[in-house]
Each structure stands twice: as C-alpha cells, then as structure tokens.
Image 1: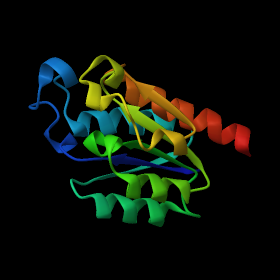
Image 2: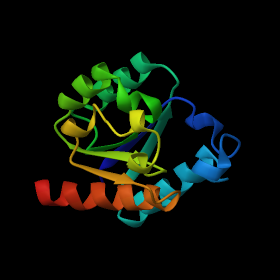
Image 3: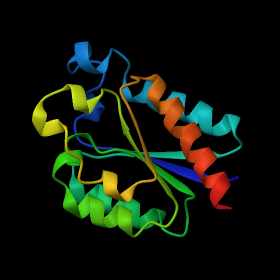
Image 4: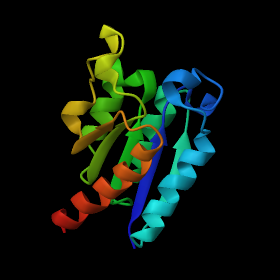
Length: 147
C-alpha cells in the first residue's frame, strides 16, 4: 500500500459556492471522497491537505519526500506564478500529477501558462469532479511503471 498526497491550493476550500458555472457544485470534501475511493480501490492510502498559503503547500511537498509514492496537486491560481511550488515539486522523486477542474486553456489567457507543468509526470484538466478519479488512476498507473 502506497500513500498518495492530494494537495489543494488557494480558494479550493470554497468549491461548491465559488463560480459553480466554472467549477461545478461539488465541495472540496466531495472531491476528496472521490479521490479517496479511487485510491482505496487500487489498494492505496490517500492523504489530503488544503491551504491558501504557498509556504504551507511547499512544506507539505517537502514532507512527502521519501514518504509518499505520488502527489496529485491542484495548485489553483498558484499554477500560474508560484515558482517556489514548482521548485518544491522538482525535489519530489515520485509521480506528480497536476490537476484542474476546468480546462485552463479555454479560459482567460493568463491561465494558459503553468509554471508547475514542467515538473510533473502528467496533467489532468477539464473533466470536472471526474478529474479527481482520473488523476488518482493516472498516479497509480505511473507509480506502478516506476517500480
């Protein structure tokens, strides 16, 4: 049994109430439940951490080193400018999946660039709540091929 760390960035604690036309009506706890079910179905454990603070997310990435097999991260707006999160992800040797509820490439132009993408194994975007299951399955598959 491996541990997968699910990280949720700023404002994701407001899911279900914030811009439901873009992000849907499910809450963050609903999405964590989807991810937990997917991890459990593959015999893995899921840990979740959400923060609106960049440094706390970096500390969580550092804490996953040598302990977790994979990180699935929805960095929220940090996707587009948080070089320190990108640097932290670069230090994690396991599988890393970048996750977004919406397709950031069909939205405002400032959302088209991700500073973390260069440091991840793959990206799941635009599938809404179902993306959480897909991201966990991608992490499981990528981790299995590493071992």
